[in-house]
Image 1 (cartoon, rainbow, N blue to C red):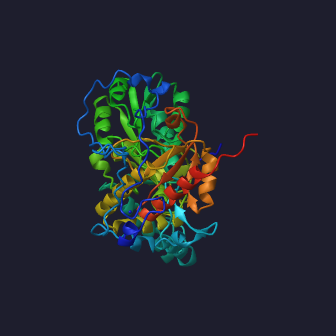
Image 2: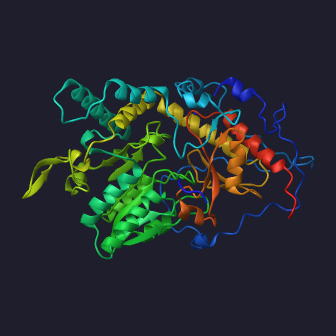
Image 3: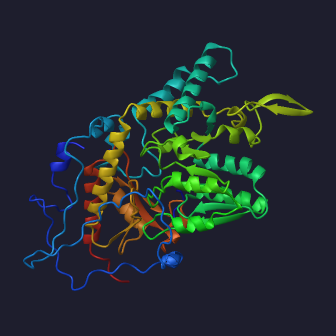
Length: 501
């Protein structure tokens, strides 16, 4: 078992390698005497058997369903409707081929094949602007920040604080003092749990954590709950991967102190109604922490509209370097939080009799930060801001719909998670194929995917699974990438089974 864990005309008009005839119709499949039955409801989802009891407003519309066999009027063999590719001309303001030219790694080969990078859920590739920014810092701009009087210190500090402002702009907060630099989402959640949690949780208090969470938004809460004798309560999943809003309403109560929510699931692609769920939590006086690691690179985020108390993301999930991340917190909450770590940068004055601390955000940034990482993050966010985010998001949505329909043509493939409005996370099983072995076979074709539990074991367990394969899309992926994946899966399925014994 493994551990951790945006098209040109030619792309659309070319014949997909996985078998779409030049006429545009899929080959006929033999008629089935009875329609396929859905799998039985897993034990972990048995609470859904009685159906929904509440109405939650502003739910997203259901997306188009995957192609289903259709009976011809003449009684001939059924056919499958082909998936619809994104438009033949790029959406206004977004040209995926221009974007791809900025990412050097997309132009290399792996195992003698052009790289198809479909492991964006684990980490995104870096544009040359980010690579150059990090190199520039180390080659010409190396200095510490905040504490020097010389020119290089002032220049490095300017870049560092411009990175903080870029993060504030990305998240829609007018106050850059609400941005704390951390190593990533994991450290952000641990900071809140160990500082806010230790100061605010007590015996019998409750922390609601969705069953779709990455381990990074679960384990830190388990640790502080054990220390403070608080209780973790899971928000269960619906069969399509949505969070069960009926159960969520039932779980909220006078003892709820914190609600920990993903903004986009790394294994199901689900985008919960965070604003509505936050409003409900606030009615009970609870705070809400949102894990935005999988969200920020896919669609615009506004923490003011969400009214989130805390919001976290990792730089390496949004085209920036590893080792740098962001925690947003409402100023009044950050100012009330005691320091988590002590050391340089976070102090005002120090003596043996005691110490006083710097104002936020510096009070929560002990020691020398990842200065080169912030330079890279600044470059990544500037790069993203120069794109038409609305057009890029629309492109990704179209590509995700295309990929979902294309994968549905692979015999024996089971897609996990079909929530409306999901991001381009395509987690699946292929009948008769071990997930790790399948990922290895795809790697031999130059296709990078993830296999394992994806650091989201409770989410997979809700579907009766321990491991699965995940292909995750980003704004630089294309129809050709999807077609290459589907063709490789078709090839794997066509191979004869090894002899018994």
